[in-house]
Image (cartoon, rainbow, N blue to C red; front, side):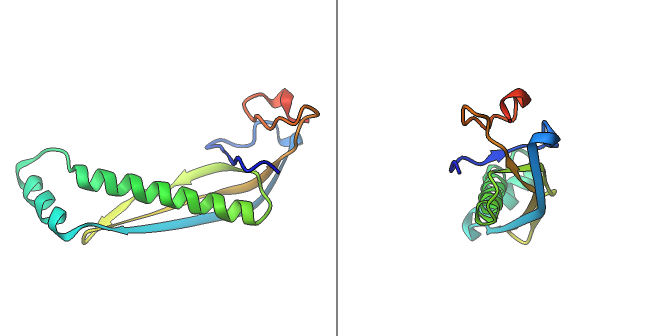
Length: 123
């Protein structure tokens, strides 16, 4: 199996050539730096982008997606379909996010490709 994980926010492109499996989820909780948190709270009073929290959300989503892929690989899947990202929650200087979807196996074509964007390539 290729080490490349296929991630789709849609259903399997060709259900006849895709084996959809178990529901998978992963979470990530990241804590903010206390000093930066104070700066962000001051900036929040005056308005503007809260770049520290934006970065924290991006890191948390990326970490949760990475964990989701690891869970899928461990169960023998080479893809995940119907991926959804929960609304990240920022509470008391932490960001929590949960991502979920269905693990799946994209059946390889004779050429060895697993390109879901081209359903004809999945055989």
